[in-house]
Length: 337
Ligand SMILES: Cc1cc2nc3c(=O)[nH]c(=O)nc-3n(C[C@H](O)[C@H](O)[C@H](O)COP(=O)(O)OP(=O)(O)OC[C@H]3O[C@@H](n4cnc5c(N)ncnc54)[C@H](O)[C@@H]3O)c2cc1C
Image (tube, rainbow, N blue to C red; front, side, top):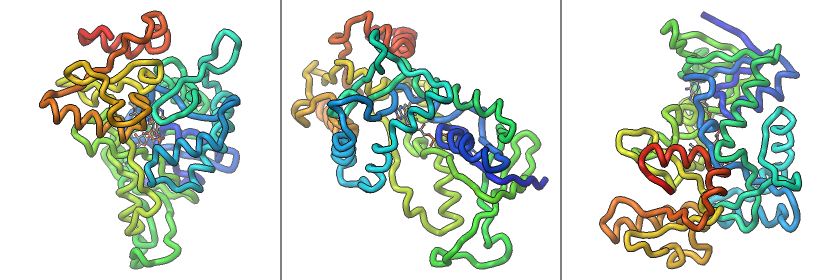
């Protein structure tokens, strides 16, 4: 079957859905996703989104923290753009209906996470991603210019190559005419032609044996772009989460948000020693790569299988209020944080 649209968007996470809501003013939009409509990394994000909200925080501080946490890998131009525009994007999410927690005075209740020198994490309890996914899907479903197809698995991008032209890494001006998509309900491959194709297929966390990422995170978009262009230049960063709680038989592993460390929890080794100060003066709030390497080192030194996240510095009421899902999950597997 052949279908035509103005905008084909592959992926129904925060990237695909927010793009859809913006371009729907300019034409017909078709979103496709290979699983259920909300089965995305976005839905599983817990901690929240970093943005500069109030003084004494500033964009310059956020840039400095991000470059530092990026350990030399960041493109400063992109960091500047993302941090400068951050609060505008948050306002858009609020406009669409997302609810970020506030304190008694009505100001945003900002949390702190690893690598951040200020409290700047906007959150919805410990289920920020689920709140954002719900908000965006609500908007999409009621939009007359947007259709969303679930269980549509994008296989390959259509380029000049499919018209018989040779396309190589050095070919300039490679065009994209849409995608070949496996309809998992009919088991047939459909051709979707579009003026613009947006790849919003998320990350590739499933490359790792132990990951907090859901099964959809298999890097399909990266692979499709590689096959179409012969390169994935500009696509270099793959994020993963160090503080997961792996429970045998469960996949993906369960994440304990970094926000728990932001609220006061500390990492301890098998001797119950608070080891992070040996690795970084920011202790348990050091950036993720440093924390991950330190945890790995401590596990190798002790020969054990894990380190501990000591949550006792956080008052029980505060823990219950801020992290209800993490608490419920921990209790369900016999751990009282
Ligand atoms: C447990 C966890 C906690 C996190 N916590 C935070 C946090 O606190 N703060 C933060 O900023 N970030 C957090 N993140 C990261 C954040 O969730 C992601 O960076 C973000 O959601 C990515 O959004 P996305 O739209 O790019 O991709 P996703 O939300 O992953 O969406 C990808 C979409 O593409 C679809 N797709 C993939 N391949 C195909 C294909 N071949 N055909 C059709 N559809 C396809 C998928 O089905 C899905 O709909 C967390 C991630 C995880 C897993």
